[in-house]
Image (tube, rainbow, N blue to C red):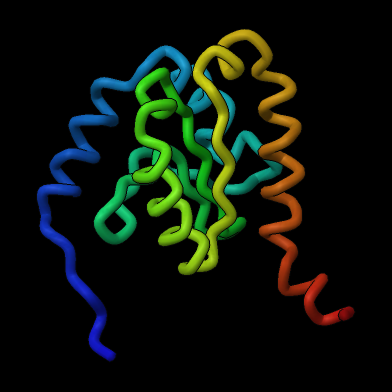
Length: 128
């Protein structure tokens, strides 16, 4: 089956989102960038198929989403998007912006745990 191509509009939109990040995204990015989390590389506002992931680590097979108030109103869209990403082998973590801004250490602990297991999944699968 040929690889499905998606419009380049996502690339342009991703670039715009990188320039216009929310305070919660900026705070999370300051902790994820440059391999600050266990040496695992994350990218921000990454096009994945028809969607854009807020933060993505290919190494850990992990997507981290910073959700604002609008996400409470788009549950069906978010669920479809999550299924798409999970089908491609990514674990998806979602955090409310308020939680990121008020308890970043707890957020990083959850992300760190998921990143650790995602980055070492090949090793754990071999022992099953």
